[in-house]
Image (cartoon, protein in one colour):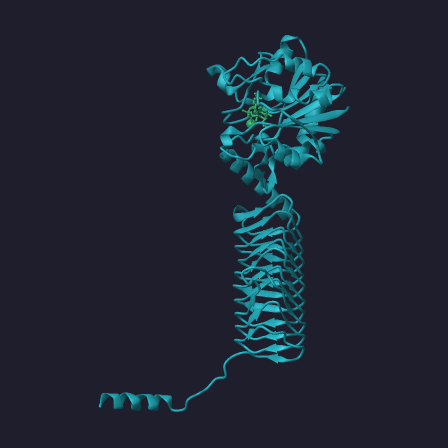
Length: 461
Ligand code: UD1
Ligand code: CA
């Protein structure tokens, strides 16, 4: 059976009250439409068409390597939206699976079952339905006494009797392609919204005596549509829970799933422990035997094995095996830490490369720096990397020892195994093995207390 899919994604999503097209709102780090794309592809769709409209260029950019895009310039309803795919699918002989871009939890398995049910029934149209405790907002599936689907009625057009029906239209259907687009062009817009409803095609086919079938989804949560931000949050929390459960089943300890937020594309190795209040986003990859959190946020981070990160924020950086980070470190984009590095409390790093086994234990800022291996950076060391106009590099050689409270005024280089005296402001390169020290000599005045009190008593005379 050949299967094509059309994803309806042109609507503005008025109820989202947003400048962003609805299907671009993210659920667990990915735009909703990407989940639907994956699901239809997973169900075996060979050809995929996305109908874009409001914010269409953004939608097109997101999906263009995975689908063909057509535009619905005016949002005249779901039937009109599907009709826009006609030029691409007019001659298509098989089944057309239609899904909405705002139903991100639907699975490939469910879509494949729908396509199989459609084929088995030999139907013109098969609608995926769901029985909901609270069907408010959804189109109701109206059946006759024999249980045969008669039509779908939208909430706003339904009679009180129809509103009591709890079986709803999920907005997901299979249609036999031949004749579909002709039937769609005949759909009128005589309803409360003045739109061309795709749902009307069901009643239309029934009246024509064409076979129409329905399949009930096993898990109704899969087909929750996102129309406003409350539903967005519900879908997010459901998927978040699912992601965390998959991770737990794969060998990751998540101490408190309720306060752990992990994006869909994150990968985490076995025996890693995630403490509460931790957010792991984007394409982050974490190795085995790590301890992450509590209270950490990682975005697009690659962390090796045995890494410990506590109460820290790490963005777009690479963390080598057995590094320890935090508490309260801030690692900004572009950092690369070799294995066994320690970045301690209240340390900020930006575009900084740190060699194996080096330590930056407390209260430091390293920006645009290259730190060798086995380096010790004393508390309060600051790279002065910005002169008000440009950023400059700092290079610190292997085995160097930087005393506490050093200012490294970039561009500057500290050679291998060099020492810097605490409190120095280093503006000139320090050769390998040298001691660089820059501070006023200390002077001690003996018996200062006695001299002081003598002076005071004289003044009183
Ligand atoms: C739709 C169904 C409803 C079903 C519900 C399931 C219709 C008329 N109603 O209602 O029976 O219970 O989905 O979630 O189909 N779209 C376009 N162009 C348009 C209008 C909409 O592409 O002109 C797209 C939207 O971007 C969205 C999808 O179609 O992805 C559904 O539109 P939406 O306005 O959310 O319909 P619902 O009111 O949810
Ligand atoms: Ca919807």
